[in-house]
Length: 116
Ligand code: SF4
Image (cartoon, rainbow, N blue to C red; front, top):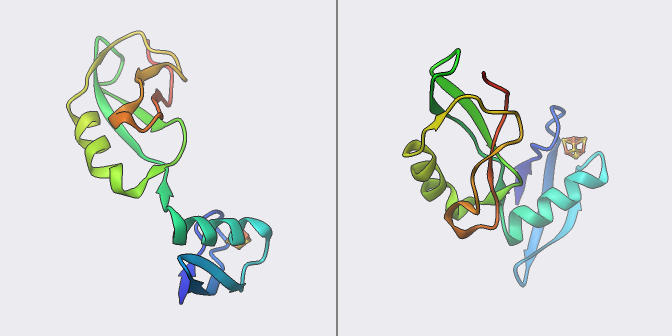
């Protein structure tokens, strides 16, 4: 099997086999992060999620947000739905928790910038 590593812009093409649900014979990764990425992609794929939410009283109408850690791919639609139904009031500081434990993932949605 084959995938493109998305951990850094180099985008290495990685080949691997799957045995008993685990990635084996991993080749093509230029650094160890590619091996870890491949193993995670096969076992339990995750992604960072970024989006924007409406902010009331801010200098802009939307504020960017990001997950505090990668979330399981299977939870992305539920997380995006929750984000799209959330709004905040200014001021907000970068790193503020906007949504705690989103979709029971144990991961928070954080403000990605300060907005007065
Ligand atoms: S394997 Fe390493 S160098 Fe290649 S894309 Fe992944 S992180 Fe970047």
